[in-house]
Image (cartoon, rainbow, N blue to C red):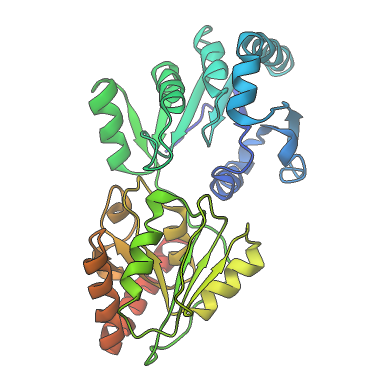
Length: 338
């Protein structure tokens, strides 16, 4: 399936500071043959240094948007006009949301020789991170875009339900995220659990901490930058509050038995794809688009509540054969995705 018009210059616009960066890097790799031009913020000139780049400076999120909303549209239109003069017809692709994306899409929509494509990770903002501004601006971009790419059918249905069945969504599943980790740990009498990623309300870490209180585990490591501080007196719970390097992530994936995703809601998950790539047994809440990313038999699925999480983890503690079977099924599935 051809996602982009090869008669046009592919312009990949990534202005986010951190959002969906690993996903973006993987998508760009896949389009390398198209010789894309990367338009990025000052934060990522080094990240994309192996590609042709253009700098488009951003500032401090919502504050900058409010201060520059009157003039930013003019700046973006002038910037794109220069690219049009240099390359002719442009195909703009946005792998991640940014507050200014809709201005780029608006410019392309004003002239039919240009086109634009968006990847929609989350149509609605998550529990604890709700933002009417983000949802409003993303919807404006969707309505004007030439093509809308979704990682799950769950998100496609949300878009069509809210904005109309005529919205055409193309399903492009989340790619595996690269990692040097290969989890080869056999079952143990006392398991080591891992929760990984940016720690925000919808990730359900409070549910997980409560669930493990009644379990005979060796430890639970909660690793990733915390948006809200996690408070616990359980000595078995280790908290690593920082942005992790690839090497640190690999070490964590290889040294723990179970990766737990106790999400309260989710459209999709890059952490889940990282777990698949590492061949790591996972306990996952059956919410949103997550079941689309992994076959039912390749993970242990639970409901997003303390009791179900506790019972699911206990099931793996008590059943070495189930742990081994899931690990084998997961490895088979991971190898199919490579």
